[in-house]
Image (cartoon, rainbow, N blue to C red; front, side, top):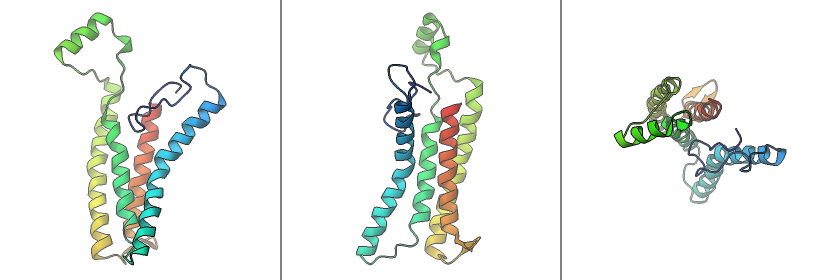
Length: 168
């Protein structure tokens, strides 16, 4: 993973050591970036909770839909294929660019199609969590508010797909 980018999620910052060596410092840096990417939504939720509490607004139902939206947003960067032109000759690359063609390996197209399915499904789940949190906030699944189950589910599916895309 040295020198690879985080699929467009962190402004293109390299995941590993830019000089090509893979030492402990740079592996920890990659973990720090992942922690910041995946932890930042919880920081925003904490701030929103403090503000809602300070303003005496109902602060118990916003977290599920917020996490559900974050989960969907993690998936959006995964529909962009990785740059895998390195195996093609320079002549072929020029011809492809001239024709405006995008080359996507079959092994990558199937996961991209699957991500699209999950984008639509998780968007519907997000909408349902909004409905439940507003219309029936006392609905529970497994003794947990239903809108939170949907929110955490969307969030962890988004994280899972993001991590899988890094490996593939």
